[in-house]
Image 1 (cartoon, rainbow, N blue to C red):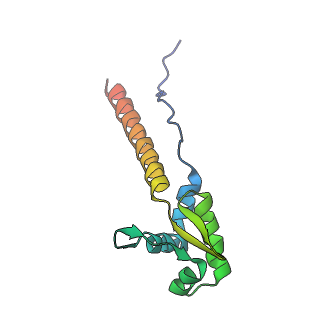
Image 2 (cartoon, one colour):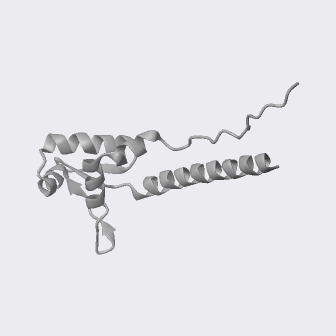
Image 3 (tube, helix red, strand yellow):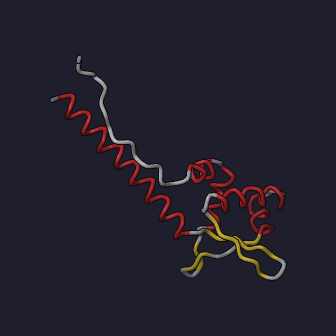
Length: 121
């Protein structure tokens, strides 16, 4: 049988959710995340939808939509305080997801280097 020039590389597992990358790619959601990760006295401060809307001159419904996408992606958490919903950065989840993405990039890099060395033979 003729030897194939095709390189076989292990398929990395996509452990992280692509919703995270989509959520972070939007400029408005990125700005909201930067606001939510502004520490005050060493702690992340939760913001209400109204407070976030006022920071960016957006409607509350627009901010709510973006926060729901960020929450679904595991990037923010919501807690109720009376009638208000307060949102804060879910740092633990973000840290875990970014770590998984970093691991994926490293596995791709290792596979690429292995393939290159096999080609050079």
